[in-house]
Image 1: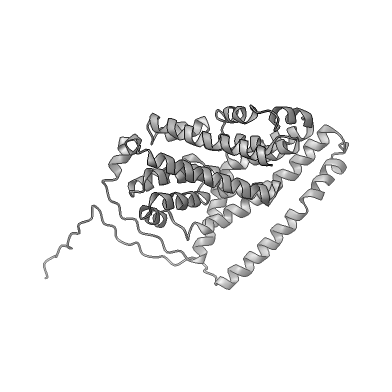
Image 2: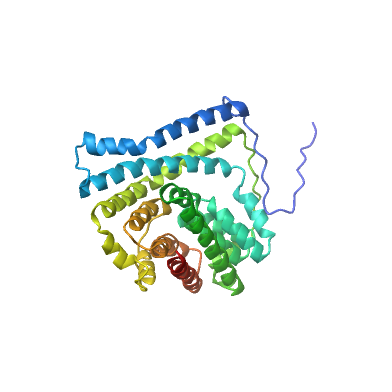
Length: 366
């Protein structure tokens, strides 16, 4: 009998055996998936294109509500926007779920860890667009970046961009307000995330990260990237829809309900006087009102659409939306788990100034 031999030790802190790849169940060819995807998109578009006439039919024919009434305007707004937003949400979340199997967090950590701050800020902000769109889900990725040695300013660019300019906000803004406003929001949101992260990075505040996260930098963990088949990628898209849509549909319907009430009952001259261009104090007031609130982009976009329809200025409304998403009190409580108070205060000040600048700029030029 041969004596047992011990495997040679390695210098890594931990080792991990590569798991066996299990074959996917009922694998289909790429062409089959492409054909099924085309059929699904055609069906999706057929439903989406009939939402407006169907909402009019339900409101004024089935329910018998008078067309020019406040109630009719509110009900028709809700019956049209609710399925419209949920359909857009489902489609884009499914697509992003597939995209994330190509751009994994581990691969992103490696890319960001080897970038200088200016370039890294840009890459981190761009990555924030396709990540989960709330601080509670972005924070674990932030911790992973710190552990991988990514500079603080770069990680903060990601942390700002993730909730502020995620794919959900962009698609809903495009669907409800058009591509021009969606593009403006993307450009300004990226500018805030990149600039704020760069400024804070230059301030040398690495010591303001909580000690328990600093200690994680000394540990090494081997993470093996999973190899995805197209069956796995489609499954990832389905899981993203189930996970994300299940979390945000309540915010979406609540936001649409508020938007419907504004659309049907709030006079245009009232919103123009409170949130119009002529009210210089409207931008800082909108930011201060937005900070104690908590919502995500999916819940805010319908409200933004209704406010703009009633005469509110674009800069004021976007400043309000940005403050709710990026500077809300619940978000700061989440960040307190990983950042010390001095860094949180700096984060609020720098991002807040960027939001104020954006609001006044849009009100001035648009």
